[in-house]
Image (cartoon, rainbow, N blue to C red):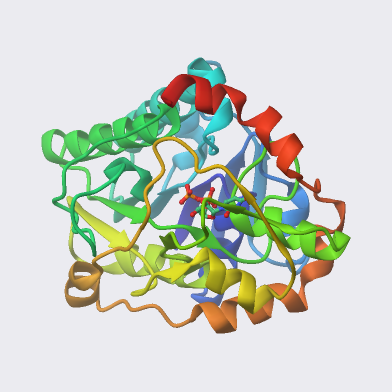
Length: 330
Ligand code: UDP
């Protein structure tokens, strides 16, 4: 079996590759432009592992994706730009990677004979601030910023290609993914990287608002398992939420991590809760999450050294970094 993993050197992609190797894939081709992916994320792989890493930008017109895609059984399209602040400042790069990049991958996938499944990694940010919790797949789509919008546009392209060109596609909407190898450097991003670096430095955790807001924190190996479950199922043209089946407050997360807190202002456009209704993926794909937040956090703390080089955010540096977020959405 041959799999293509775009974004395979990224956080989720690298865990998917571990999973596919356990499933005995004989050929895995990684396409990654290494803008946020890192070869070190795959550094733990056995030298004999059948994984070919190609330093390629999926949105680059000069790249002939068809040559990499020949005889592929599965495409996992994970390459994308994440993070909110840079998407507000540079929507063009987000459009190019997340929309045009997806368009090019879909166009090349059309030419593969016998493709079994095209799996797209979508984002729960498409729901914006939803009316109902747990949130179902048929809830209103309300992206709040370019990152969310461009991921949703990629999903629309996917579903359209599925219907019109009969591509066997599935989209998975991930909720707050965390785990080893989540990004450690660069822009202000997901809460785990921020808090773990603060824990190492012994500085207080920068809790947003009153910390009572909750998130559906989903462990990355559960995500990898969901990607493979979607690929191997005979179901196509469907969208599934992927969440932990639970939601936890930031104050609870701080209790699990252990340390002092400091409070920073609530961010515009951010929901007080994210909580996926996962009944659809459970019943149609037979997938269910395995890792609770307590176990997940323990695993993160066991590997905390990974975040040694990560930036240590303070209320002041966060205020500076998120200025354009507040200016755009307040
Ligand atoms: N959060 C926090 N302190 C931080 C960064 C984030 O308390 O320095 C909170 C934030 O308010 C949210 C949760 O952690 O409730 C997850 O934030 P993240 O940016 O990781 O994801 P998102 O808000 O997009 O769900």
